[in-house]
Length: 358
Ligand code: NAD
Image 1 (cartoon, rainbow, N blue to C red):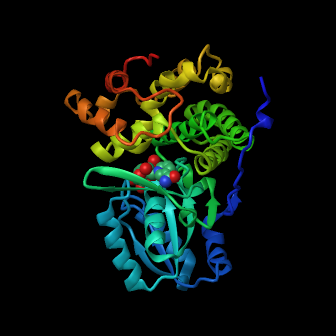
Image 2: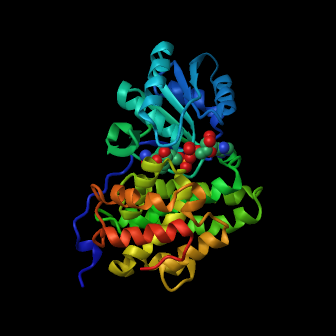
């Protein structure tokens, strides 16, 4: 067998400025200045409007507007409303404080305006580290990848993630883990991305039980945030596969919540592909102490009390045919061929919270 080092690979590092352990409110004005900007539009969801107001106060005269309407899966109609706010404010930089939904809105605005972005992530979703934008229109989510979509600056402040409700934190961390897991068997993986995927997985597996036991454990939050950054970086550098395709199909087609959908589907998707790439998934099996990665991930999710049935998110038996059609249309590369009947069976198990099966 030839060594992996004999394979040609391309490593494209991220050009973003990443400040870890940041005090985001104290530092954000300096980051605006560093970008040569002066007029910031602050973006949040409605639920996180208070964070937007606090950030605007910290920015002082540099804050010229606050759009608090970001929503899951970046609906194009909302982006168009935010563009009106952007034009009215004559902003010259975008600042997203929130999870993947808010960061997604900043990317959608950057695409249309060419402005730079400062991302202040408050979940573990990892969008801040990627040049990927998923947008939803007419019930379908489409994704695009362009270098200019990647935020120029990321401020990681643990004080802003530790406000996540425990349930969201666990699901969001499993969403991060999914980036690493799919990164391990990505067609265009390289030794650097595999290294980051394994270290990101290690950090999350170490932090999450501590986080579940004590949501005031700041070290656990910080280690989870570090792991999520690595996992997000992997997502930003290699192509994802069947698991992400399934999540995009259900997210765009049925408006299911992103992090919970990832948390539920991950063991199922891994068990679908594991026999095709057992050696690539062995590190996950090893780190979870299980005979296979799928069993290890399933046991981890259970021990963390993560959601386990798509039915609880609102999916119905009657939705399975359309879900299968969406998941098999324009499939992402997969180490195991995508077969509609097998995927429908997988979705049916995930719907009912049944154990993952190859
Ligand atoms: P989210 O951003 O939708 O947040 C979920 C809810 O939690 C929102 O109401 C939000 O305001 C709230 N919230 C977030 N952080 C909080 C905190 N610290 N304290 C209290 N409440 C908080 O959820 P998400 O899972 O981070 O992001 C999902 C979206 O991001 C999806 O649309 C997904 O497609 C996208 N995404 C994109 C990429 C990419 O690379 N393009 C990567 C990951 C996720």
